[in-house]
Amino acid sequence: MSADLVELVHRLGAPRALVVGDVMLDRYVWGDAERISQEAPVALLRADRREERLGGASSVATLLRALGAEVELVGVVGDDADGGRTWRLLAGLDVTADGLIADPSRPTTVKERYIGRAQARHPQQMLRVDFESREPVSGGVERKLREAVEAAVRRADVVLVSDYDKGVCTPGLLAATVAAAKARGVKVVADPTRGGDYGKYAGCSAVTPNRLEAGLATGRTIRSADDALRSAAELRDRLGLEAGVVTLDKDGMALAHRDGRAAMFPTRPRQVYDITGAGDMVMAALGLALAAGADYDPAIRLANAAGGLEVERVGVVPVTRDELLADLLAGAAGSTGDKVVSLPALVADLGRRRRAGQRVAFTNGCFDVLHAGHVEYLREARRQADCLVVGLNADAGVRQLKGPTRPVNGADARAAVLAALADVDYVTVFADPTPLALIKAVRPDVLVKGGDYRKDQVVGAAEVEAHGGRVHLAGFRPGFSTTTTIDRMRAA
Image (cartoon, rainbow, N blue to C red; front, side, top):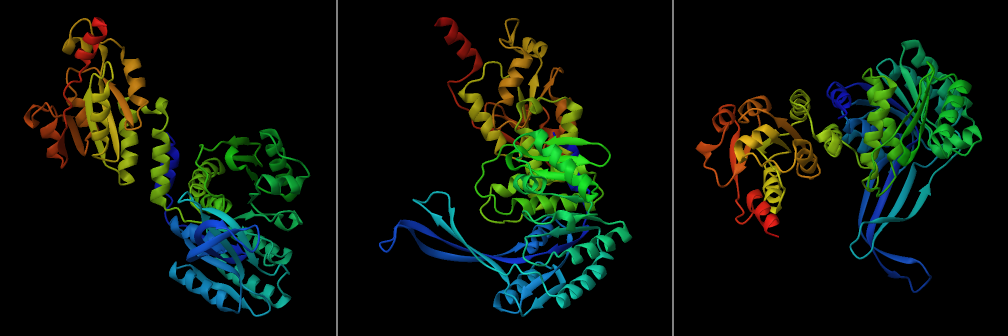
């Protein structure tokens, strides 16, 4: 399990992040794509909902707030209704926006997306319409932005530059940002624009281009891990960075550090619904971890997990710290190899789950020849809490309980079969005649036993209730037992 990432999330605290860059408003129009228009061969969207969210640099600020950071934002909006809406959304999130400049010479950047549903299936983006200016801000606006950055850096633990090439991240502003941050020993991480002059990011701590952006910046097509690592190293050396980081969508991230580290960080396979906001989420999580004092390796791994959660959602939807913790824990439980654990490892993992607010169910048994009755029983046990621990009798214990011909399957095989079940989070083998010592170590919130027992017959019931837990007697399905299953097999 990614125990170090769970511990990192627990100790993140509330670091202060300064976000500098292109502030945007994302507007979503949702509806049913029912038919083709009679006027032209295009899908007709029957709209039923309109939604507005913060985008660009303000999206990074939103995601940071959801992850528990204190956030200050420096950027530009137009002196228009969309700019006013952006101000109100930021105020509602408690993002400090004293450095947000209203520029009457340009519109607020708005990305309007049309999201269609077909036959009640998952919604898909059909079209995006952008309202924007890409001209660099005027000298007067740039001076105001520099003053805002220099004041805000004094309060920051990290600076994140979100450059969408809408005119805010000028070479002059970024040079001033880097100088002010370096004077205070604060890291600057830039999510660069596609193409253009990367020289303006010189002196940053790190840049995080995606596969295409890094390829354009270094003149190579990134198809392999070696390609990504070479591009990251080239950007690191050319720009005088502490670390070059290339994000590689489903392939994770590549790191080339000044100290010689070169590593690939794979990501867990996900159901991808929408990549919108994945880069912003990676930026927010990476910056948050670095602000909390983490090194690049765990910070990148945490950013991978956060970005993976983001692509499972439609649009830019904030991920909370609790959701990130739950995903890290669930990801660990998803591997059958990680599910079969020793008692010390189990107790440590359960401690992390409990700090994340999860409750633990426990049951035990021989589970020699798994049958439908076992599966139903374990499913009911898992429904009692957030995770299920199965105590599995060692082979000697099974022989003591069931006779010299049992178990049919050894403990390793029985544990592997149990671990393959989605309802089982942990399997641990115990050698004692009863599971009492294991129950005392696990301290389950719910102790589960079959409905053919009375509560006064359940080993550990008194101990569990003494620490505030409860006993659950699961439903009993007649006609299924390991003994009768073996007898039928022999008869056949």
